[in-house]
Length: 313
Figure 1 (spheres, rainbow, N blue to C red):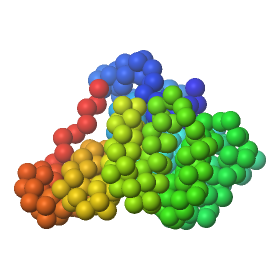
Figure 2: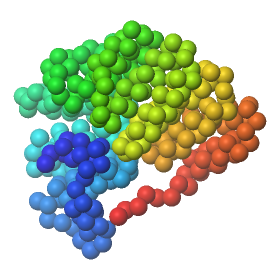
Figure 3: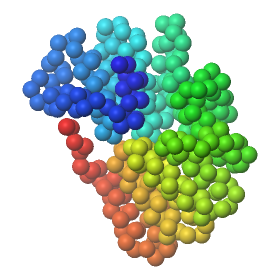
Figure 4: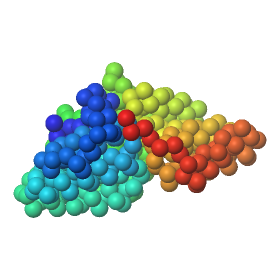
């Protein structure tokens, strides 16, 4: 199984139980560095996959960078490209977007030197990075290329959602509505979450604030159930924005608090700081001392870096 496949399975929460045994085995006895050189790449890659599955993205990113080094040592270009792609995914999860962009550019150059085409997954990640950098025209163009090239693929489904997010950022209600229609009615939980999130954006643009809060909140619940915790943060933050627009700072502060706590424990510290600070300010303005205190407690955890270390097994 390629590293890209491992990430896809990790995102779906379907990582093999065997990987947890491998991680436990690395916790004592022979370390990765003590293994025969021929075994280090495979073992390190597997441990990185487990770290990703458990949401320890900083550790996973460091391990995938090590995998890339080991791959270059044996001149295994395919393994190096897979590892760099996976490291870029981790960087996106950590909101280190410019670093992800730089790594993707190096990866694309590596593929070019090897005379290989860019995988569709890499193009999708590139579109996501462009969106996060607010380079909306380039992001939309890349997403549309993905949809045209592989219209029935999962990557095309994600690109369609991305087009809807870009339209929402540009306050283009017609395009948001079109993206919702493209997703259509579905029983797939992830696609339902996508559709609800876009519906929340549409309602926000149309000033139907209560409906917007409800759609974003339900999308967050679906994403949490599917272990898409970064998506959960995004939807909760949008629910906070919709609550603010509705003139309900108390409700907004609670949504921001929930989003900020999740971001904090995912390691997205810059995002967490912004959300928790907003939660504290709004809670104080609404006279909600309890929520303000809870936001402040998590800000202190962030600032003092006293978060408990993630489990290693």
